[in-house]
Amino acid sequence: MSALREILSQRRLQAVFQPIIDLRNGDLLGFEGLIRGPEESKLHMPDALFRFARKAELSVELERLCRETILNRFTKLDLVTKRLFINSSILSMEDALNHKGAEVAKLTTLQIPAECIVIEMTEHQLISDFSLLREMLAEFRRAGFSLAMSNLAEGFFRRDTWSDVRPEFVKIDRQFVSGLAENPLKFTMVRAMQEIAELCGSRLIAVGIETEAEFVAIRDMGIRYGQGFLIGRPLAKPSLQISDDVRFLLESTRHTAVSSGHGRNNNFTQVRQLLRYLEPIPPEMECDKVYQLFEGNPQLRMIPVVDQQKPIGIITRYSLIDRFARRYQRELLGKKPCRSLMDEAPLIVEQSTSVQELARIIGSSEEFSVSDDFIVTHNGSYLGTGSSRELIKLITDIQINSARYANPLTQLPGNVPINEHIEHLLHAEVSFVACYADLDSFKPYNDVYGYQRGDEVILMVGKLLAEVIDPRLDFLGHIGGDDFMILFQSESWEQRCRRALELFDSHIILLLNAEHIVMSGFMAEDRRGNNIFHSLPALSLGCVPVKPNHFKTHHEVAAVVAEAKHQAKKTRGSSLFIDRRTH
Image 1 (cartoon, helix red, strand yellow):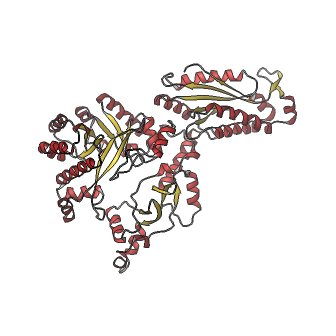
Image 2 (image 1 turned 45 degrees about the horizontal axis):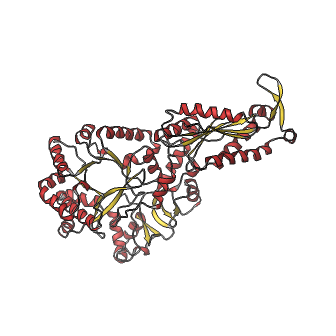
C-alpha cells in the first residue's frame, strides 16, 4: 500500500483521453478522461490502481486526484471546447458536492465551461438511498454539469433508476457491443435500451468498439455515438481528427451487417474482426518490468514488442515465467532489455487478411499452436493482437450460420437472410437497389439438357453474380431454382449489372450444343405439352432503386422488384430493366 500512498502524495498520475465520435459523420463529441499510474509501476493500469485504493480505503482520495489531473491536462491540451467525460463513483460524487465551491472555482480558474463537463456515474454496488442520489444529481445539474450512466450490465442502473436520473448520456457497455452482429439476444437488449433512451431523452454511446463488425453493427442500429480502440486509443495527446480507417468505414461501409449474422460474404470476413488492442512494450524495457506486467494481470498471455510502430517480437507468459523459475535466472536477466528474451518470429498478419487464409497459415505451420495469439498490422504498423481460439470460433460460427440458411446448391444465403437484410436496410433508412435475377428458357433447357447441366448453369450464374458485386457493400442471395437477389449499395450498380449480362452471354455458350447455337434456340415442350421453339437461355435483371421511408417491409420490396423482373423478361435475350419511378 506504500506504493499507492507514494503515488498520491507525489501526484504521479497521468491523464489520457479517449475520443467519442458521432457515428453519422465522424464529428468529435468529446473525450473520456482516463488515468494511468507510473509507467514502471505495477499500478500503471487503472484496474490495479483502483483495486489497491479500495483495499487501502483511499478510493475517494484517488478519485479526487484523478479529477484534478484530468482537468489540468485537459486545459493544457486546449480541448475545453469539447465535452469531457469524468468517471465518478457515488462516494466520489458525494465528496465533490461537499467541496462544490472549490470544484466550481477550479473549473473557473481553468476556464472550462461547466456545460462541457459530463459526470459519468460508475459503480459496482447497488444504490441504497435514491433520495440522496437524486439530491446529488440535482446539485450537479444546478452547477451546469451533464450526467452520464454506465455499467448497465452490473445491474446497478435499473429501468426505474434510468427514468429517475434521466441522464443526458447512457453508455452501452462492452459486453453488449462484443458480438452484437451475431447475437440476436444482445441485439434485442440494445434495441430495448434505444427505446428507453428515447423515452428518457438520453443519447446512447456504444463503448468498447474494437472491430469493424462491431462498428458497423452499432452504426446500422442507429446508435449515434461510439467509443473504443477502433475509433481511438486513450492517449496523453489525443488527435482532434478521426483516422483514415475510421473515415473509410464511415464513407464506404454502408449497412452491410445483419443482426442475425447470416448475410455475410464469408470469403470477405477479415482478420480485423478479431482485432483487440494490447498495449505493446519497447524492446529496451527491462525483463523484470515485463515480469511485473504479467504478475499484475493474470489474464495476460503474451505482450507484443514494438519498435517505432513496427512489431519485432513477442514475450509469452509461459516462456518468461519458465525462464525466471530457473535458478539465478531472474537475478541474471532481470535488468536486461526484453529483446534478449523475446520470440523474434511471431505470427504477424495484415488486418485485411481473410480469416480463411489465416486459418490456412496456422494449420500449415509446425511452430504455431492454436493456443497462441498473433499480431495484427496495418501496412506493417502495429494495430493489436488476435486470438487463435477466437479465430476458430468465428470460422465455426460462419460455417454454422451459412449452412443453416444457405441454398444447398450454391451455398449462397437463402430466403431468410435475404428478407432479414432487406428489413435491416429499410430500418437503417439507407438507399439501396434491389435487383431480381432470373433465367429465361431455363425449364425447357432443363428438359433438353437434363438437371445436372441445369445445375451447372445455376452455379455459373451464382459465380458470375458474386464476381460483379462489391462484397464490402453488396449482398447476394439465392432465392431458389434460377432466381437470385442482389441488394446493391455500391454506386456503380448499373455497370455491375451490365457486366453480369456480358459474362452470362459469354459463359452460356460453353453449356450449349453447337446446333442449338447455330439455330439460336432449340425445340422443347412448353407448359401445355406442345413442342415449340425456345430461345437460348438468357439472364433477365429487374432493378428497383429503393429510397428511405418508401417501403415498410421486405414484402413490399419483393413485390415491386418481382414486377421489374417480369418487365425485363419481356425483352428477348439477356436484358436489364430499371424501374425509374420514385420508390
